[in-house]
Image (cartoon, rainbow, N blue to C red; front, side, top):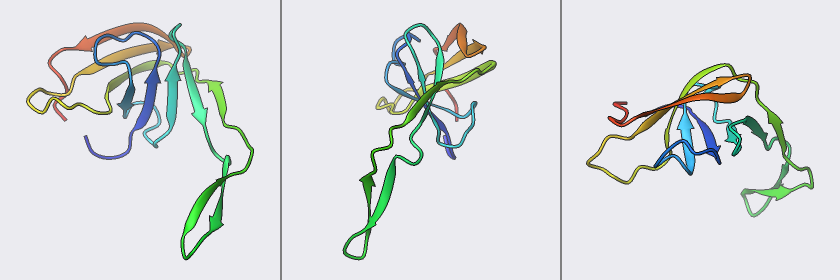
Length: 118
């Protein structure tokens, strides 16, 4: 599974193995972060402009600037395939889950027990 992906953190029960950080290439595919709340609503998490850069000893470091991130509803219509960000079971294919949204709310979940073949 190469290339850019988005991170989805889910507090909604998508089934075994889908409780922590998940990856998908079906929303923006630009390393954005999303959250699914316990009610199944999709939220966009935006951390832009929350840190500044400071020059250290020939390096840059991040410094908090007091600006807080923003969480806002993401009104997505369609299906996304999510898979665990980490899958330590080297002898088994990475499982995936098809999640369908209408207006940013989950209307269907289908687990793929065979795993992804990417």
